Image (cartoon, rainbow, N blue to C red; front, side, top):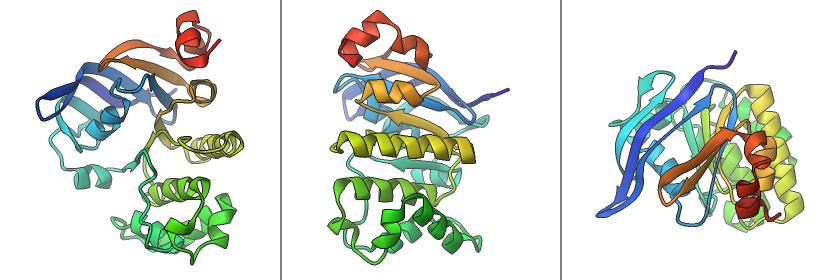
Length: 237
C-alpha cells in the first residue's frame, strides 16, 4: 500500500511582484510517478523550483512528513530531492565523469564510483563518452547525463522539468522507458513536468493539470488520458 510521500498545500510562488502560483495543493505517493501538465506559462517549472526553494514561496511542502518550507535549497538536496532543470543544466566544461561526481557532492559513503559504473550500464553511451566534456554531447546524451547526475544523489524524490525538450521522438521514448525502469527497480518517487502529455500520462500513476497558476484538474493518469477535455487540450485528438 503506497503512502503520500510528497504533500503540498497552499503553495504560492512569486518572482518579485509577479505571482505565478496561487495556492496549489497536490501530493505524490511514495514510489510513484506523477506528472504535471499545462500550457506554457501555467506555472509548471515554477512549481518544481518552488519545491526546491529556488523562488519566493508560501505554503507547506512536506517530504515524508517533514516540512521543507523555509529550508535552503542545499538542505532540501540533502533531504534527497534531486532536480533536473529544463535545458538539462549540465556543466559543459566538465567531463561526463566529473559531472556525475558533482551529482554526489553531498554524499559521504564509499559507493560513489560504483554508482557511476551503474549509470554507465544504464546509459551505455555515457560510459563511452566518460572523458568527453558535457558540452560536446548531443542533446539526448546531455539529457541522459543530467538525469544520471541527479540520480548520483540517490534521491528519494526526482524532479524532472521537460525531459523530452528538444529530443527526437525515438530518443524521448527510450528515455521514458529508462525512467520507468529506474522507478520500478529503485522505487524512486518522481514528479515530471512534461509537454508530451500522451507519453507522460502513459508512464505516470497520477496527473495534475495547471492553468494560470491554479490546479485545474487532477486524478489518476489513465483517467485524465481518457478525459475528453484533456485529450482535446493536450493530446490533440
